[in-house]
Length: 109
Image (cartoon, rainbow, N blue to C red):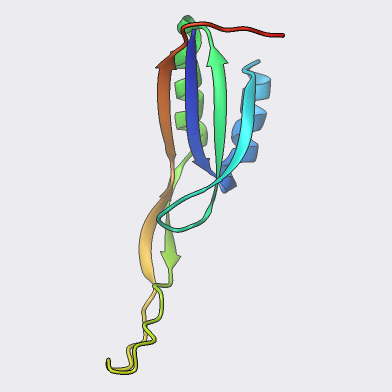
């Protein structure tokens, strides 16, 4: 048995959750916050049999797409600096960060 921890952007979480239900994959959904853009993420905890790990990874890969998004950089309020107007930057967001860990024991009470 393996524990898959998948961190996806909130925009992908509902679709991924629905695909998990259709594929009979049980997952626990947790709200989380990313560090770089401070945007909402969802963390899925999935306990799955070894033989289904590749199937779950493929579902995550197909459902959690990477995309470009514009982000406004923070404004510098230092009066000693020249007034600079920050221009939006295009950054890549989305996709998934996935960890697969071995499970030594599993108990259900």
